Image (cartoon, rainbow, N blue to C red; front, side, top):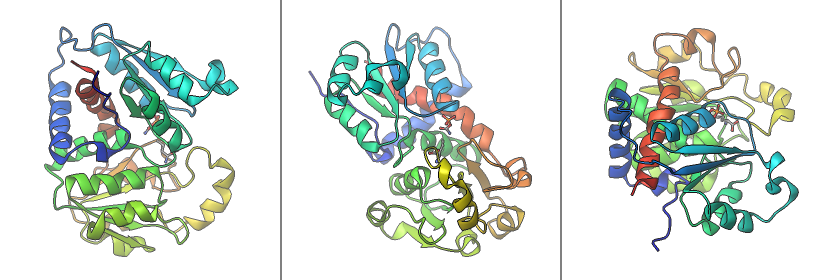
Length: 300
Ligand code: CP
Ligand code: NVA
């Protein structure tokens, strides 16, 4: 039997595959055909160690549109929460379902699952990466402005899982990425170094926003960092996306945020609810982009 194909990182896709996936996602969005059921009878297990609105709903709806179904599993109600080894859980669950999506704290939980799973494993967010969000964000960018190759993107804020996935997207789709983050909150050095000269890390938002075609940010404290909220509010106070920063970027620059957002912290209401913001297009695209991903990984 062929080993299963996983989606743990954007680096699991070639540039051509990423672009085809975006174009397929846009086709699926524009022409919904209820009779097209490439995953009829297939089941996706979804393991969530953390909360989710978009990821859960988009995967569950996507499976349903394609004639399959999804099972929501919380560690609280499964033996995972009582310490059953990941290796055993991955073997057992993958012997019964056709795909497994996980949202976990540790990235290693997802890579261990992938190692022991006989079916495709999809990363639905870890502390290190959030690749599914980038499929949707890139689809939204392509839909508004065309191919992102050669463009300049500015990341503002924490060097977190979303930032790492933007770095990987810059590699696969070949764009320039300026990162502005407070000292001590820079992204993982290995991930930055592997992306080479496309990436420039600043500790200042205005320098990073110059000539930018897309400004992106995320919450100051991610899931699991709630107790650092106060400390982070101080560290990140100069790292807000506001109209002044948007004015430094190119005139037709877009704004994105994976959501949920904290208006008045990492972004002002004026920007996120303004004309340059495409956050809700990107959020909707989670459904379409992941349907294209499920088709790529699960349809035979
Ligand atoms: N952007 C995102 O992944 O949202 P959820 O946490 O709601 O899934
Ligand atoms: N960086 C955020 C993204 C949420 C979708 C987190 O990990 O909580």
